[in-house]
Length: 406
Ligand SMILES: *Cc1c(COP(=O)(O)O)cnc(C)c1O
Image 1 (spheres, helix red, strand yellow):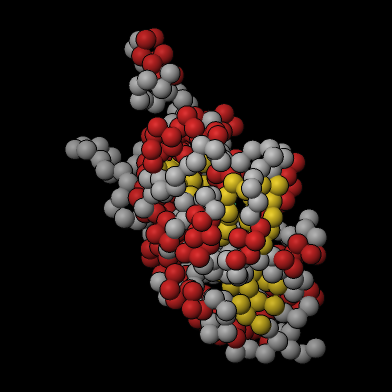
Image 2: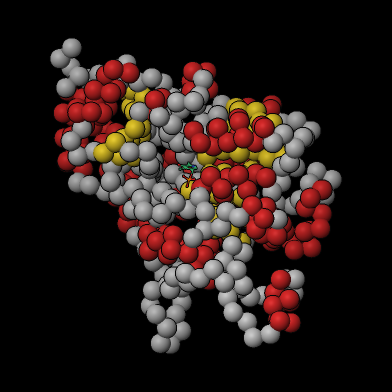
């Protein structure tokens, strides 16, 4: 599907998906334009609402995830914001894993809170923690399939069961596992979001996001009054509401050029994921043998998530690992010693990237919030790329050994 799904050219049409770099679309009659605006007739008329290049990328990712329908967004952050706001408004409550991407933590703890949506963060390692936090006004459970930065594996079957027993959906961010390692819908997730800026795009050259709906959740009109008029769309209800409301009115559509870059990236998603997962595992094993650092990677025997990774991630562990260097000074020294590995705030690039989360992504977080997310002063996040593993092991080994002299 990564290689073959999506754009299917007809005879004589371009082999590669064209970039429809046009704001608007032209029509012959004013009557037809009226019908399009009224949604009586299907057709493209303004790229914020629909664009053929964007639709193609949404359909392809939807197919890869086994969803009912999908909407492409300008960024991963927009995807998360809209996925939540589509079913939660002022006065509502959500329960989120505390082990989420720093930007998501800030979105929930600050921005959505200002808008009247309250959040309880829970330790995701025990699914019962989600149950304990549910209130009568809770509208959804939220988590990351493979948490950023510590690659904690969320037990999707258990957490989705808690959600469904309480009549609410589970929304997951699957950016770091990608459809190559996992289809969260198969394990009970109801809505899946991705920052496609990362692995799906692959080269670190386009910001983008996506929301995929499973179509499986049955929306109770009592708990979700806003869904009442959309129930008639059946398994498309959630996405039709989103398309007609928040998504088109707030305006976070994808840029067609970025949709095109996502499509090109997806052609090699399988190859890249195979390589980066193998590289990450071998780098984790090599680092574990060194004195002076501790390593956190779900496939290691030492990880509490070892078994779950075997079961839920088809025996792979993703491509993000964290190491702890013992102190902030040692972490800085280690990072600054790296020769090939670049310092940058991104993941899912073909290049191996490192960052010191405490002084960057979590700079505005309290020490308590950081500890809750499993981020410490000496934590280094590594997003492993496709380079030759021998070069990566050598680079990190020399950097770790440079600490030894003190
Ligand atoms: C990067 C990232 C996001 C935010 O995506 P943007 O495309 O940068 O807006 C959300 N979730 C995870 C897990 C991420 O890594």
